[in-house]
Image (cartoon, rainbow, N blue to C red):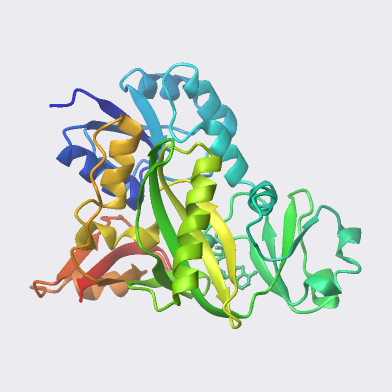
Length: 348
Ligand code: ADP
Ligand code: MG
């Protein structure tokens, strides 16, 4: 039996699912979150609440754990780096710093000769001139974006000028890709050239928020292989330990692009809980805690639907689900529009 206590920064649904996976492996968990109502407190062994720069709370947290991981990327680098002086942080803080910055992330991916969307850094208003090449495009904050937050679709330079943008933050303008499909690869790297990699997952978004994921993805063999190869190359180059997700775009000419990397477990991988012998969450815990690597086996094809806002109510009131349906309620206190409240996976 393992004697490990794993610290998890962030107490949302990803933290909950990590804690559930850890429990199965007899790994104890302590969740640290700035939200006193964080849902993961329902699933972990200990819960510490405080802001992510509260030194006292951070010490209280790290004193209880053997190592630390995180469920979301927008954690101050200083916090992760400070924690790393006392307890190992996996994935490494430097990996998180690179990936949480859209510009640094895309530069890194391009250096590996992997295609991304075309992009340009925007730091001041005058940078907006002469950008026709990148339009229509999407203006994104370089840091702290998620679920389409901090993003502005832009058709013309005029439109860009009329937006009231706070240029004290950094921005990136990305050329819009004429999307045919979006897919993601979830990979867990244990150590040098030791991986478990899931097959490509096909994702559909509504209002820039993930709505549906399914396997198998309807893609050609070249994209199937290229997406896996690129994800392996990225994970290896980062010397990554744990579960990582690479989000991809496929355009109408079947060109593959890396959209972004998530240095963590990912919403599109929720279906791995029911569709594989080992979920992305269990694999993450196994990798960061140095536990045994188990060869992945698919149990079934599957589809997953996110339940946003009050869509959860109908499912909460359901008396019974079919044997192939798995409903997860994240137990969030307040229902908010577009908030991820739960999901349902169907094995097909
Ligand atoms: P987030 O960090 O919010 O997930 P993304 O960059 O992944 O940000 O954007 C969210 C979604 O918006 C994408 O999954 C895609 O559907 C759409 N999107 C973002 N950038 C582009 C682009 N350059 N071209 C086409 N669609 C895009
Ligand atoms: Mg994304």
